[in-house]
Length: 244
Image 1 (cartoon, rainbow, N blue to C red):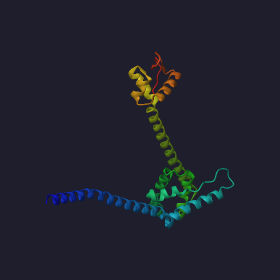
Image 2 (cartoon, rainbow, N blue to C red; image 1 turned 45 degrees about the vertical axis):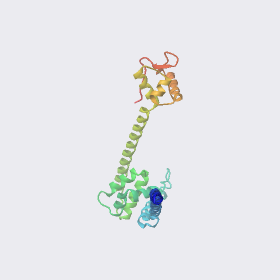
Image 3 (spheres, helix red, strand yellow; image 1 turned 90 degrees about the vertical axis):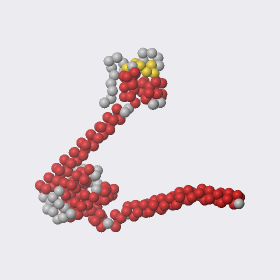
Image 4 (spheres, rainbow, N blue to C red; image 1 turned 120 degrees about the vertical axis):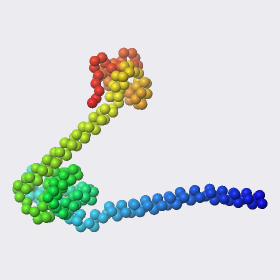
């Protein structure tokens, strides 16, 4: 009887050990199935534009208008306007959904919205102008010289604002990189501790000794840092700068 009880206990324990092994397998199978389904669905969505008549008409009418403009301006100096790339057309039509709504169902603010979205979607200025002209043709709007001149000035204003904002972002990123540079950190550390060795700087700034030595050599050559004693460094008297 004791042996049977022990065997029953061992059998129960063996079943307990097997249960946790089955769950990860089932979970893994479920995850693989979901991953495969998501990949198939994503692939189907990625190819759906090929059978979308509205998207095909959107891209073809813009590029056809660009071709007409290039033929008309063939005798003038300057590079021809390039066709709008598929990635820009796809992003404007499917990702920035306001373009599709304004393109198909125009309102009083549709032109402003189209210009703002396309300019900030990295379209070239001439491509945006041709897109608006194509949109006028689609909805049978009269294209006058005054309307074209007003639209061109509006596109230029939005483009200038985009470039200005982009330059501000680049300037801010450059300032952040300079403030976080190892050169600035070394100057700040020497300002706090007066005199430090290469080893102390590498430990304090969590940097390699080689990089610290290279920056210190440049700072000494620029006259920002001096070596009062061999192996130690301090800021030059009344001459130091922190990149800001």
